[in-house]
Length: 255
Ligand code: PGA
Image (cartoon, rainbow, N blue to C red; front, side, top):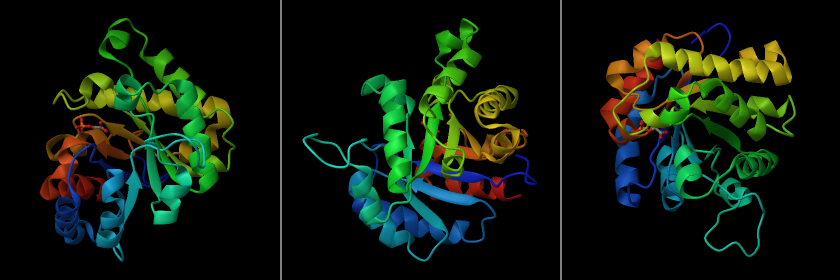
C-alpha cells in the first residue's frame, strides 16, 4: 500500500453465509473493534441480510454492500436483483465478477461489464474481481488474463467513474483454499491491474485506484500482503466471518 497515493479498503465477502440474527450479531461484534480504523471497512452480505446489516451498521464506519446485481433496472428476470433495488435499500457497494459467479453462474467478461455499467449508473461503488486459474498461471497466462478481464469489465467506464471502482485481484487458486499467494505474487498481480488501468486511463488515474488482494487473506498474512506497494487492502472471504480475525486485518491495514 502506498498511503501517500491512496487509502486502503478492507471488504468482507460473506458469500452465502449467515442468517439475519447471525448477521446482526457479527456486525455488533465487529463494530467496536473497527471503530477507529484508518482504512475503509465494507461488508458485502447476502441480499436477505442487507436491511439487517444496514441497520446494524448505521452510525458506524462500516459500509454495506451486496455480492452481485443484474444490469436491467427491472423486468422479467426471475431471481435477479437490480442496482436500483440495492440503492433504494441504502447499500453502497456491490461486488461484481467474483470468480464464483464466473465459474458457477455463467458470468462472462461481457456480463460483468454490463453489470458494472448499470451499477455505476445507479450510484453504487463497485468491487470488481479479476483473477487467473491455476492452469492459466502455470501456462504463463496470468498477465494476459488479468489485463483482458480488467479491460473488458471497464469498457465504457469514464475516467470520472473510475473513482467509484475498486479492483480486487483474486487468484482463483488461492480462494478458500488456504493457499495464499505469496506477497510477491499478490504484488505482481496488483501491479498488472494497475498497469492495465494506466494504459486505459493514464498514470494518474491508475495511481489513485484502490486495488485489493483477495484469496485466503487472514490476520497472520495481512500485514505482509499489505506491505506490497500495489496492494491497497483486501477482499476477505472466510476470515470475514469471525469478528476478531476480520478486525485484525482492518488493524493491519490501518497502520
Ligand atoms: P477467501 O475468499 O478469503 O475465503 O479465500 C476471498 C474471496 O473469495 O473474495
